[in-house]
Length: 336
Image (cartoon, rainbow, N blue to C red; front, side, top):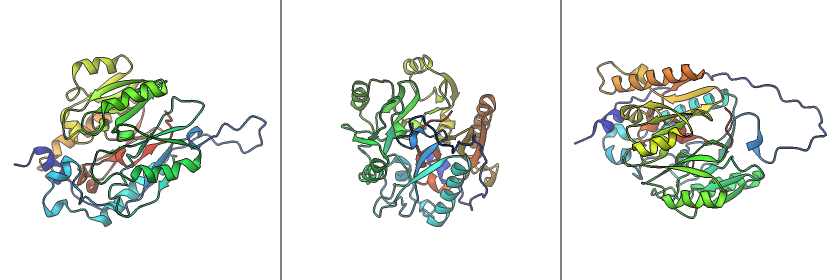
């Protein structure tokens, strides 16, 4: 029997993308010559947000490499690639309109999930060098994405190192400040990876076990809002771990149902939070309507308290692959 979670995903209707970027201004950069040594080694030193994205030229969900795909069996779950491209372009426009610089991983035939940029993570706590840890994928069909990322990033000045243990990139390792990270493990990432990165790069990783097969990456359960605050599901993370998180961050809690509606799978671009929702195209009688409204209301409440602008984007086609906002962009810096 199909679960409510799978039913909820299926009820998200595909529509045309909404046009128009969200504006975000930054202080102008002086173009006058300076005697000060150039501080820019890579794009990560930029005073504005920098992300890596990938255009969904070869996107598909034929390789069923997560539980959302495996539950999707009807004709309505076949990707509409034209709609997907339109929704991705709307997302791209919102990220760029938020003042970000975007670097693109070239599309590669045969890598259906390349658009979900899970192939690496940047380590911002290292100040004298720009280190990229490349993914060591567990999921079927994803090996090779890390090579595409390496080919983009190494010529830009980054040192790229392949994870020696299973690890799935930015969705599984979240920086908050200083040398402190949150690290997910369980389904896709080996806890030995977090021990290795602590020892190798002198950092502290608060390890968070993933026990729900529908929440197989940390970005399903936790989102770093800024250097002091996180959005976190205290129903899917054990109490002892919640206490560890509380030692370094203020928690804005979200519910189990909020998580299944992608409450934590969001993206911050400057002072804007991008979140997936198509509630404007749902009927109040749709089973997913109330849970999606609850999630949206909670995000609006949190963003209001944080002084952040919240923008909803329809990403119904991504839901067919179990994905949302944060899956499609990996940051090369963190501007709060």
